[in-house]
Amino acid sequence: MAIVSQHDDLHAWAIRKELTDHRGLRCHIVPSDRLADNGGLVWADPGDEGFRAALPTVGGESPEEERIDVVWFRRGHVAQTAAPPSGDPAHDDPAHDEPVFDDPVYTEVIDSNSSWALLGVLLGSFTGRWVSDTRATRAAESKALQLKVARETGLRVPRTLISNDPRAVRRFCAQLGGRVVVKAVRASRRAPLLTQRLRPEHLEPDERIRLCPAIYQECVPGRRHLRVHVFGDVVLAVAIESSDLDWRTDLDLACRSCPLDDELGGQLLQIVRALGLRMGVIDLKFDGDVPVWLKINPQGQFLFAEGLTGAPLRAAMADLLCAEARAAGTGPATAANGPVLHGGPSTALLHPYRSPLHGVTRPPRG
Image (cartoon, rainbow, N blue to C red; front, side, top):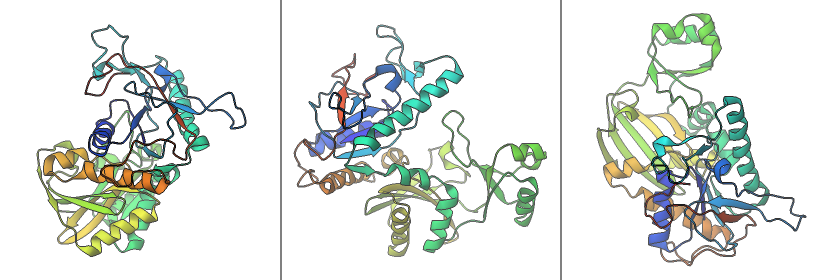
């Protein structure tokens, strides 16, 4: 198996540990943020016998031309970074990671070409199973599509406007008496934007509204939130109590595992499948006793919820990857004690690079 993500992504390392320690499986992390720093990415036309498709991995593993059955494409389109040189006291501190180039124009070129080359190697050679299909993931990130599918499934969705038209925005907000929240259409890696209550300055001047489309959405009252984790056919929910509009700002909150009724669980599974996903993390909020759809993150965070509640989310994610490996035709006979993966259906090989911290238990630096 391969997990595509940043070299120090805690989720990637936690699931890798779950797979290797408890299921005896081979799992490699492809450092999507270290391509420009380490090299190792290769793709050539399949008719050219002088080259084999290859990707770098972290941790100094030696796959020995191992082929990959399952790719968890968790974080593929990310900024390229580099650690300070080996021997520098700051080498082992992620806080000192830096762009591979100082010029923002060149940085954009490097980031874009690295991300798309990585995806291209996989699309051009990998024939195993994706978690999830990259095209479905990209489409499912659209809030408009999410809302459409949730509404068609029978869930209540808040009134929503996505616009940069000043008159439409003001008319929509007036219809709701100003009880509106403002959200980004798409999250930004470099400037994360939290959900905010509508303020007068959001509606003036026209130039500010036109500058960038935003989501204007009916504010759902209350403090009862529901975060639902879907891994294949497994649905695990966590109830969160918070008066904060965006509870992510303070995780010192009441949080517990909770059962879902069959109807709601079935609706959420139907949404994930309709979006073409194998996993997703869904946020809802209760208006009285009625669950209201907010969003789905196709590759959402879940470790914090396991830490706060003890819900078996790592195991559920690992089980999903094992099931996908079985579906690829070469996976373990059981999810618990299958063999090391070799000789899968893919022609996408992994090429290791050596870490200066080879052998340590925490994520190594690139």
